[in-house]
Length: 212
Image 1 (tube, one colour):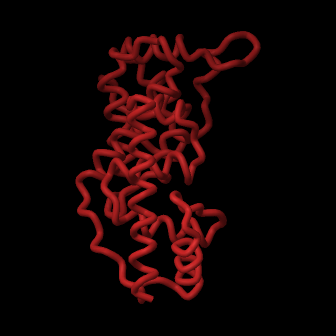
Image 2: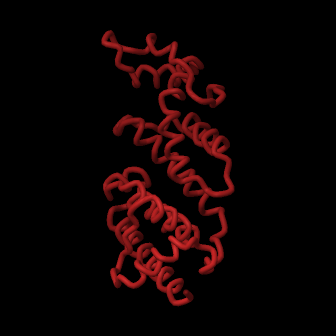
């Protein structure tokens, strides 16, 4: 396996050696070079994929995990398993699945946060909880920055599967098909998990409202 230190992307000086005449990046050529243990190509691939991996890590970062360490772990998995990449899907899709599943495994290792107390929430969040719990809707709607902050707090009380599906579908607004591509879960499984996760959130809201 090539030895590449993962850092923030620098200028892609090597890109011109792996590009077509129009200047478009030639991913297939780069992957072949990486398979041949070309460290320059490995650095180019890292620079190319780094923004995607970092975005996914920041979206799913467990609370007690270093962002840098998790990115490093994901790239180690990418290079260790590159021979398994079949080429049937874009490499970005394959990398996204590795990144999301790595974050998911880190989330599973975390203990679920004890149930929140009413005093843990700001006045604005308390008002939002009252409104959402009183609405009677089956799946609470979280719109706006303050609502998303509240949702992040409530998510910390869910298990890893529930947290991940809510984050993907409702915070990142991914489609069910995209979530399937990123996680490897079937569409029926995603829909069932999303339904159960929303019900759990609704119950949490009602319990908090009753304690107000």
